[in-house]
Image 1: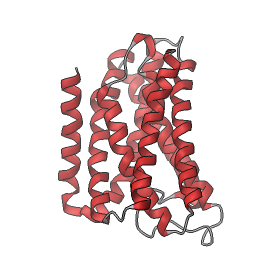
Image 2: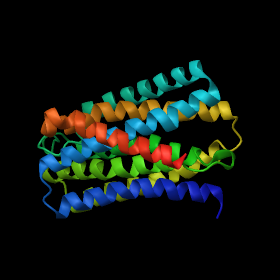
Image 3: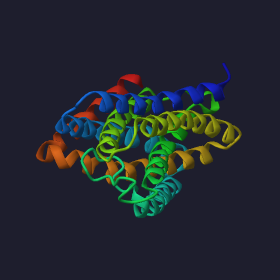
Amino acid sequence: MPEWLHAGGWGLLGGAALVVGGAIAWFVPVPAKVVAGVMAFGSGVLISALAFDLTQEAADTGGLVPTVGAFLAGAGLYLAANVLLARRGARHRKRSGGQQPSEAEQGGSGAAIAVGALLDGIPESVVLGVGLLGGGSVSVAVVAAVVISNVPEGLSSVAGMKRAGRSARYVFGVWSGIAVLSGAAAALGYLALGSASPEVVAAITALAAGAILTMVADTMIPEAFERTQLYTGLVTTLGFLTAFTVSRLGG
């Protein structure tokens, strides 16, 4: 199998986890506290993978200063895009309560939510594709982090979409499309950076990591804290330690 196709498969796997979470939320009445708890756990998993598998590796390869710069650039780019989407109704795209606006309440919010969900998934997919460059292999911890975090992301977001009156065609069309585009992003990331230097790959990794961390803090943790509150820190810590353990065992 060509490596670019291999990369696309990993991206598709991460995107498929969103569809799984969405299907659970659509067909099963999951308690809000359970959704929030899983979201907190997923946040911890992602934070651990960012710290020990992405940012550290980028710094070891590309140097501390370039990594810091790229990380901040990723955070800034995500923030700018998120601000624009928030003004169009996508601010609460991962919230499971009644925060998401319906199309009647804010026209165009459905499209904005779809674009926002894609924005959240692209950095993760790029990281999965880039991991295969230079004959490398995808980090087990990173794959686990993406899959474990995407299930509650899809679950929470679809619960909110359902409350806002979105149709099943819209909901599963959005998440299925994002799964396919996630696979495409991973494959394109591999193809576009196939001849890039290790330093450039490290910078792209740090850029994606900065965007992912900003996404976690802005869209996942607020949903987790609203329901789990005082237990959010503990559940997030358990997610962090789980991913850290997987990373150490995998290494």
